[in-house]
Amino acid sequence: MRTIPLTSPTIIKFVNEPFWYVQNYECSDQYNVCNIFRSVISDPDLTYIDVDRFYESLDTVYYAHVDECSSGECEWNMVAKLTNGLFIYFTAGCDNTGFGCIGGMVLYACRSLDNILAFALDEKQRILFKN
Image (cartoon, rainbow, N blue to C red; front, side, top):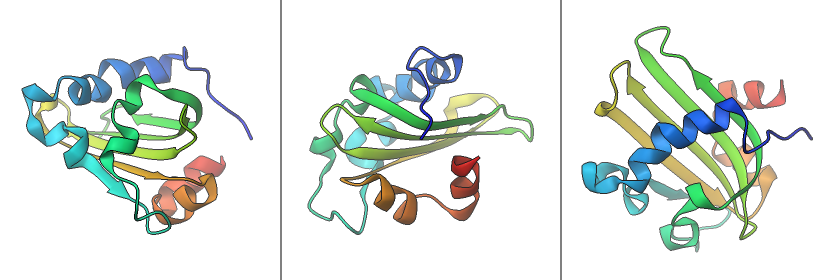
């Protein structure tokens, strides 16, 4: 399975844009990890505490896609493994002015890459992940 280096330009975009809002959630409480976290059906016992500061504990990134706001909306999607062994699917969207105006984020977590792909990604993202 291919991976994306943590120093790639795509990962740097994640760090500079949506992850910045999560790190600085006092700008907007809607981006606090406890508000964006969702457990996957296979791991209902996980909580946001298990993935708090996920943006600082990326171990392996399997998929990262940024739609460059071509339609006036930006879309961000990432599948990764954290240093604690959990897998995440991070998805975010905003208008072309950024997350400060209109935006939303969801962070799914579970213990299995197969389950994150099966239960968190939609069909479009599964197709993009495979390519």
